[in-house]
Length: 198
Image 1 (cartoon, rainbow, N blue to C red):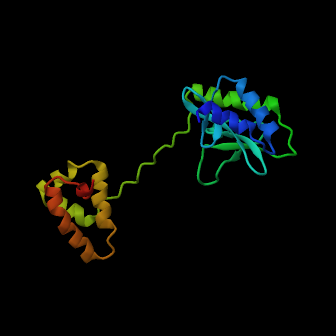
Image 2: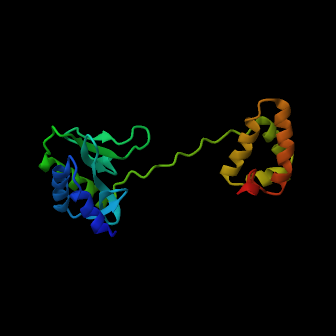
């Protein structure tokens, strides 16, 4: 079944909220969003980026915004889609008792589209892993052997950190010594601790 048929089937299927989701669809058609179908629901995109979707469930229906956390939300209607699992998504849920605020819904759709057009996004920012201080036992070995020190310093900070953590994570002094003994040949060869597994 092609995408347009899937979309039509979604809106034509008999459902408790059939009329209501048709209203949301009509509002979406007043925007410049492109209607498509993903994850078993109509999704609205701009510049090939997902912006919002229309959903229906057993007890409610609504709109989902992929980068909803960026919306101003003057009506205070947006809920976190999956608490703890996603930071960006937000839902505007309706039940049988709710009248759709068409003007409000349209303004939220337009704002979401504008944000996407401007490139305002919530791409996750990778946190840099904290640098592990070089343990004393490793530092002494590096200070006492220029070739060893050169091998260590030639490694990327990430690989240096792996070595430092490898020794620091050992609980007992004898384990630290045996780990140091194990890594010396690797450092002399300019290899990272886990290069054989990469």
